Length: 413
Image (cartoon, rainbow, N blue to C red; front, top):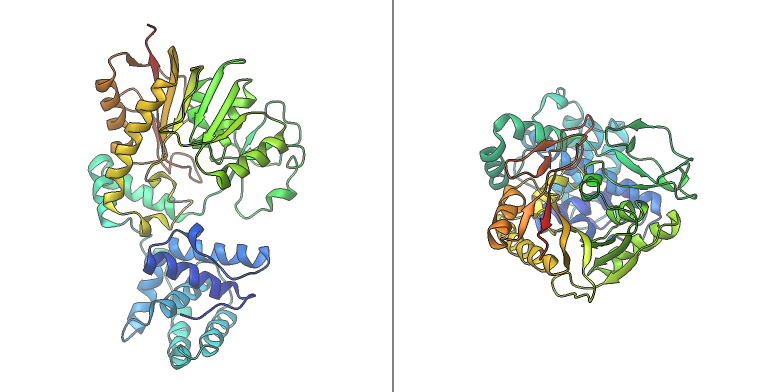
């Protein structure tokens, strides 16, 4: 495929799209050439928009292609089509830049004329927004349709099509807060694409970035001042900061040192404190059990597709079974770290009941001393039959992540 120049965000975006679609890589795992932050950010935005609209782009391009071009070239055509029809970029500049990039590489020079003709026809397409939104992969769509029904799955796909907004969780007593929409849970929502470090309150640590739905598990745990609370699988740390802001003595544990780096930075910026430990949540031990534990278990992350449109291209059906086993092991181990009478919130950002409701029912069957607790009043979402709570990506206007959460208590001895 064309190798991107250091200053060409379109070629970088095509590299990202090809890596996801043809090689099954997550965007965060794809190494890009050196470039300034603005160029990399633009490439990322183009790639995200293309992955959200891949089906639409193919519907426009396919009638004009005699045969499928190499994946790298197809990725460049998809990026260009989305930039013109979804993002409204002037077609002349997009077509010329794409064709020039193809001509600059020996392997793709023979395809430059084809790309020129195809993209010019694509630029004239009418009815882009009448095309169906990107569908979930068949295996996932079938599972979700069996749980939620066709209408809800269609609404999920529509929510995935919209770019995720920027939600801010406010530190108690925050004084310097950007103007935005105040959500039912108290988060402040801003439009995507703003420069975060330039916003009011960033330097003073009055808020941190956290999806509105991701705030709910800590709300359910309701940590009290002075309680010893463990945040298992804590990175990147939004829930840790919620717990610390409530006055709890927080231990934040995660096995990823690089991901915990952001937590250290946000704790320093906000002036909040927590003990941060890099360790495996399956094996870590403590001499003093905790009053409360929040376990945000590794999962398929199917509730975050609106934010991570690369996920449907990477996740496979077999991934879920492995994750369900890991979640059960983590939950069992977490209970050994909890005081008798202590509280535990189990949560995942998954839409699949295997990783939510079914996981809790199985845990209750394994542990007779474990009991579900009633939930506090919740600002959005719905109760589940097992006594937990679930949010779906279209619950809030403008979208939110999909989460499952349950509040459990270990009976006193």
